Length: 74
Image (cartoon, rainbow, N blue to C red; front, side):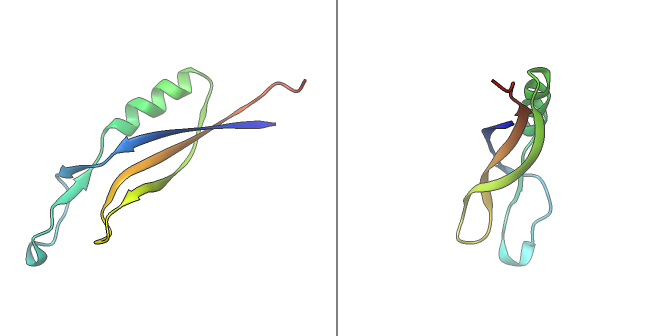
């Protein structure tokens, strides 16, 4: 049986490509790397991510990283 865990990671305004015509700022995140490595050390496997908070303009403010691991059968 699998157990699932979730961890929220912020996306920050800053680098990345943005359209100058609409004056948009790029959004980036670096925290996901630390989270994935920390969870892997605890026996979790990275399973994917989904947007958690997204602006009306389409910019993703936070993402949820999804992790899974085997649970012992009782």
